[in-house]
Image (cartoon, rainbow, N blue to C red; front, side, top):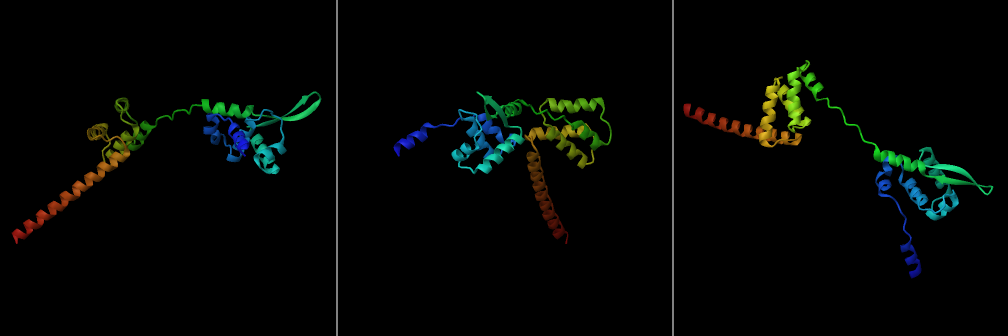
Length: 214
């Protein structure tokens, strides 16, 4: 038994972390991934479904389905090779590596900002060159587009559609350390609570005055 345990410890399957972390992006299922790990670590690339079935304890029909699925996904290719007049099927994983390399080197294009279009929609008119400069100035000084749009929404909600008013909102938010939508919502709640308490206090004083008048 001890010899078997030592043997098991000595058998290490190799797999790159790039494949491990990205196989889901290649639309590889967990079962297919196990087969791929197995194939990568084989010294021979001869296609032997029965051997795969025995080694992985998977029914041979399932092995055939998994191999076929990988071929359909263009991740695996079965080639016919002739060696000393003996024809044999071999598995080629080059397509897998090509797709993996492509997924790792692809850079997602930056989404083009539509902040100016949002302003024009809210204002119902085209922005002037000066207004473009003001908006760019906010962005250049580190104000996020999310916060700028929130300030715009705040202004239009109050019936104001000019950048001076929006600039004042952004300035006041900056003094309060407001940087995100969550910060804005928190500030609004605090403002409502203060107003509520102020109204309750005024109602209390009005009640006192009414009582004195009577």
